[in-house]
Image (cartoon, rainbow, N blue to C red; front, side, top):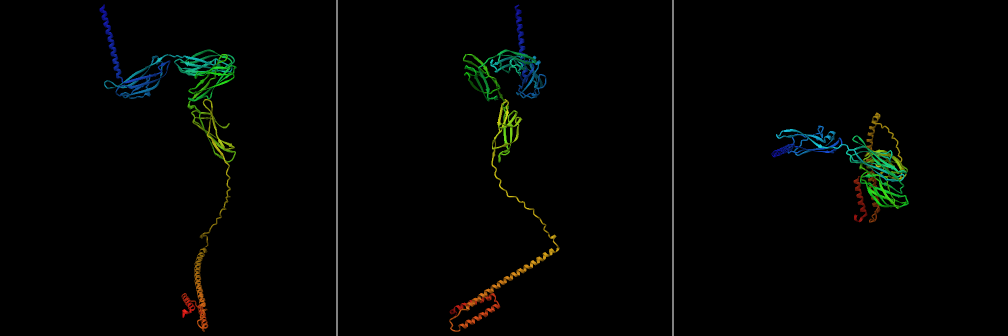
Length: 593
């Protein structure tokens, strides 16, 4: 018996050894086979948990883990066997890789199988150096949990006690706690009869908010909420139990205001809270809180019949509603709670900011008489990223023109003739409502028009138009008779003859003048001789008279001869010299002796 047990023990050990050896051999073979595969594939799927057929994001990375280039291209295939064209057909070098990003619609069969399987085709070298084609499947596990469509509904009533005609806010927050998106989410409340808030689609894990505002009457109001939604083809309903909104007369009223309805992210908004004590007792220890901002003020006091203003400046970071909750204690020890109305501050994108520019022009900048008519042109350009509607152009309180729409980036213009009664500065305003419904105004440039007294116009000399000239035709040689030419020649000959005769006359006149001059000179010389002859030589005693008379007779005889025959110039000159010598002799008888 003991021997049989030993044999059995040895046999079991041998069997376990054989199994262990076979396992080791399989692992070694698998490792060797894996070492022979040059392609490495990494696959990522998002999400990995599904509640039903849905689209998944896929990323596949294919690498050549060998030390040599692949001999052929690599191709990828969808789970349905269709080639992934976006991946292409790359030929991977040693150590290189290619990544593909895409999507795949996960089917119910794949959800049931718990995995998504893709396929890869490539070429490689075998142990003999031959090129062989290979195909491998690779998969990624996924989890199918089924459809879980659940929501969590919360309700906040502010204030819980309200006076007559006071607004009461009823806020519902619907959180999708399931694993599927819920659609067509609707919220109703019995206190807001006839109102329905549709929140659309709420994704898994996200929240939707519905706010009802009701006006308090003179009795309590019951609030009961109902939320309906759809998921995976089914309709679900969630209810919120009834709550009482109490009626009460409040002596402390509150009002919350914002200086603007919103702005760009980072802009500032000032919130102003006004508290008014209409009672006869002071309210002390006033605390103001907000669901978003937390505690804002504490320990405030509002005296009976007085008001208090509190301000808070906040920075816009998103679109949000603010509603301040106020709790206070009067001097009698009674505690009250009230709340302001909700104030919405909207955050807008830069492309949603309204911006208009206006450029004004005038046809002339100087007028010389008043009143005067000038021609204005105003160009309006929409430089914002949104269209502008009902854009008005005003001057003072007068609306000059309205543009129904100015598209983003568009320029529109209009022209107006205006009567002005004085010079000065003129400016226009362009007005439109922004995305928040606020009226914005944009000023144009300033146009200057100057009034100047006109300069008197100088009197201009009249322009006299001369009479038109009376042209007469001048006859030509062809128009003359035949005798005209002959008469012209005769006149030419006569002119020559007359010219010669005139020249001859001129010569004769010159000769006569010369002759007359000579005769005048001879006469002068003769008179000189008579003067000399008239002298008497008293050196002689007697006979002097006889000589004087004799000489005088001779001179007179000589003059008569000269008159009959004029001497030549040489002769006259000689005679003149002789006369002069005779006069000198007579004058100086001693020298002559």
